[in-house]
Length: 426
Image 1 (cartoon, rainbow, N blue to C red):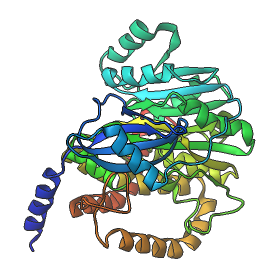
Image 2: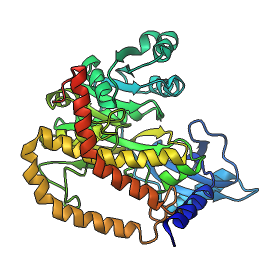
Image 3: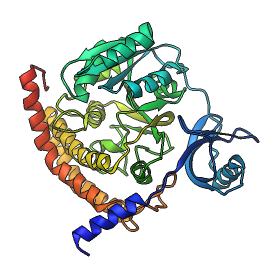
Image 4: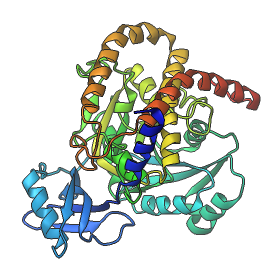
């Protein structure tokens, strides 16, 4: 089969992907409740991606099918109970610390309003919200914050483009001992901020905490395909990464930063983040490096001896990109961001190079084994990432590999561009 024919077949398969509903199901005692996901209509017959909760806490996801004429709650509850997704009775987290929430945004006032509404509904007892308007070309974001949110949200302007630059401006403005970051295209669960920041109270050695990211909608083929192959989720098992006891299943630790979490759902102890200089401004979306600012932050914190905690109890719902073109851009950006952040880490901490090179052979062998396992059937389904039904297009894999080759070049270009603005690239 020629490359052109394969590409046409990939597009045909992509277009044949049908929407999936998003819902939440709580198995509370002998009773249960079902509700649509954030912004979704009521559940009807058809395929449903379900977040299963136990007494409010996330315990897993599943993909169910509601037949015509059936009652969705009864069908999905039976499926969830059969799957064993109940989880232990959750305990209350300790009192969370004073927290600053930083949201970087650029010309997306409509999405930002939805995110801010969910942040202002948090059950955290003491927090502030800082919106960083990154290289604005209109007054839309400022007008929204001042008109709708007044003193409840602080507005900060950062004229230099780039997500890491904007996040660093947020760090400068933050007043709290813990700084949480999320994006303008999420809806935060009401317990998100408490669950994300309480671990800092329980463990003084923590430098960073990350949380669970699930899809807010699966209404387009691009959204379904992305979630079919993992999306941004890192599972439902909490885990602590400790540089003093490297995990045996992570041969490249701590350089496998993509396993730890994502920038839409992360928090840092402010003193630790400031001690490592914040995020490298030559990484991140909006720069020639395309991404990697969050991964850079994870590795820098771990490299300084601080622990990183992943907790699935801290949940945000993310609005995935809508189109095939979005997926192409995302795949290339992920590849570029990966090698750009590795370049940044080794530039700033050259003492890590021997450790990186020593881990590289085992790490590459481990990656090949994982790739072989994934491509044995080459497909995926939301809610059950090991039973796949939608092939991952080879074009997207090729674009990610091209991005990986470009990443170090993009990082160098980003550093040069920053010099013209007078920004430090530490």
